[in-house]
Length: 106
Figure (cartoon, rainbow, N blue to C red):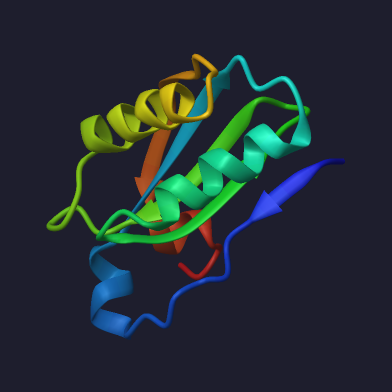
């Protein structure tokens, strides 16, 4: 399985309690490098705590702080990343839950 995972940023318990997880279907990833481009671009966004992108399954999981970013911003960044690397990535939300639930901490 080709999987591109960001290094989780240190997070205190209060931030984690407020964090959300969003699950995305990401289209037009043609190679494992595409997953790295998407991961690295999202990781740079303020409020993004962790990014996992699964190239072969064409999905991504992003842990983020809703007070610092929004799902719409995440989708916009993915579209912009594609333009920056001469690809046309798109994404749609397929699920959302509290980060603690996604990380199986709850």
